[in-house]
Structures are given as structure tokens and as C-alpha cells.
Amino acid sequence: MSCGVALAVSLLLSDPNVALSAAQPTVAADAPVSVAAEPLFADIVARSGTLHGEVQSWLAAGAGDQAGFFTGPAFSRFKAQASDLAALDMQGHLILKERGTDNDLKCILRGISEDIPLKVAAVEAAPTPAERRVALDELAYLLNDNVEVITAPPAPEA
Image (tube, rainbow, N blue to C red; front, side, top):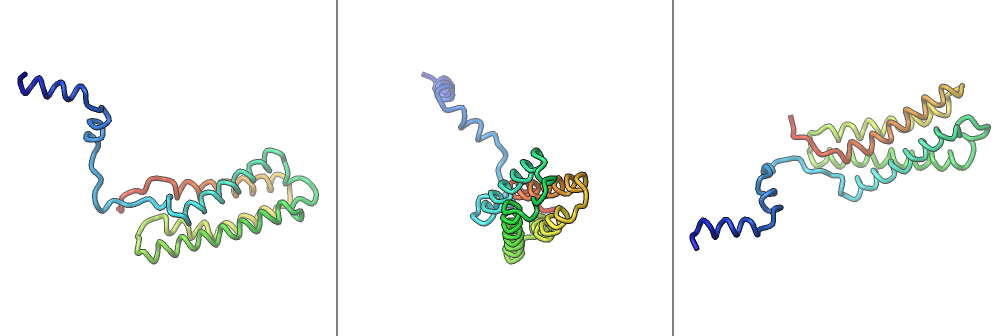
């Protein structure tokens, strides 16, 4: 058997995933690393996702329009959990700052940390049902953004 035929047979019998992975571009040694799998950041994603789902369910049910909703146990618990989440976001910011990273995530986490209490307060202070819906929608957007910025693939430093 000639070498060419042997090579062809070997390629035909080989795993196509090996050839596919060999065709992928190599990752640069200094490429940014995602923090999404780190325990703190995974916790932020999980908590933010849960709170986002809760706000979405309130929006769908019109819960914010019910009398006493903002003084009830569900919103009080939510408010405490949102405050804890804001503290975790700030902790994430400080960790990335301590590592010396110069990426957007560090700044975004700080901004989200500062915005969560403001958005919760805006929901409480909204005087009309329409304004409460807008405030709840903005809070939901912020919580979803918190998930997406952490889970998005890191971009190379510019």
C-alpha cells in the first residue's frame, strides 16, 4: 500500500472533530479570560437571573398595581436580595480592580452596583401605575444586563 493511500484511509477513519478543531484559530496567550465560571460571578448571574424573573412575573401579573404590594413580604424580601446583589456586584468590581484588569466589566459591575438601589427606589416612588411599569421594566432590564455582561464572551483589550 502506498503512503498516499494509507494516509487517505487514516484520514477517512479519523474523528472529524479532530480535523475541525485543528481548523479553528488558536487562542492568543494574552486573550481575556471569562470570569463567568468563577464562584462569585456565577452567584451574581444566578441571583440576578432569579430577581429578573421575579420582576418579569410582577410585570405580567400587574403586581405593582396592587394595594400594599410595596409594603408586603414579597417586595421586602426582593429589596433585601437586590441590596445583597448590589454588594456582590461591587465586590466583583473590586476583585477585577485588584487583579489590575483594564476591561469594561469592572466598570459595568460598579455601575450596576450603584444603579440597583436607585432602580428599586424608583419602583417604590413611582406615583402612577404607568410609571411603576416603566420603573419595573427598567429594573428588569438592569438585572438582565447584569447577567449578560458577565456571561458574554470577553472581548480583547482595545
